[in-house]
Length: 147
Image 1 (cartoon, rainbow, N blue to C red):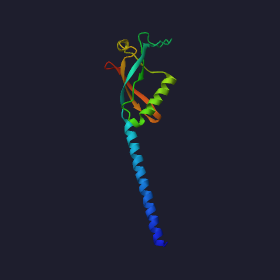
Image 2: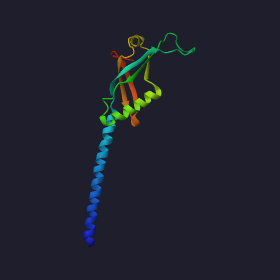
Image 3: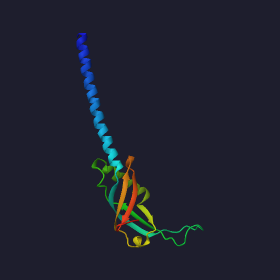
Image 4: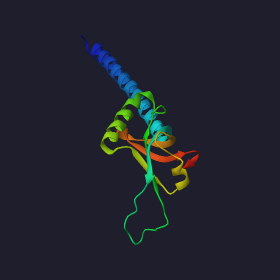
């Protein structure tokens, strides 16, 4: 094989390699861009109340005796607003968190709203998703009011 043929073959191999590399970077870069958009946006899902009850007051001289707080515990019903490629991972992570820590809870001073809620009621949860299937709750609302 002559030197000229070796150079042509070398250039062709290099061209194929660079093309494959650029294609992979494009595909991988699109995945990163898609994931970044998914993470940046908030999601709103329904949740089911598992319990409602007053918070036990701490024995502290600085604690106000007039403030009554209620704890509303809930489980997120589904993750329909999360892209299907990631949904199962969030289901799995939330199931493990539920087994480890129990239902999520929100403490609220809104006594009137808390007294109108009971086990089985539906509420709305706004959250952000993060790396490693982390869910950060931003807001919880019921009957059109924030808790």
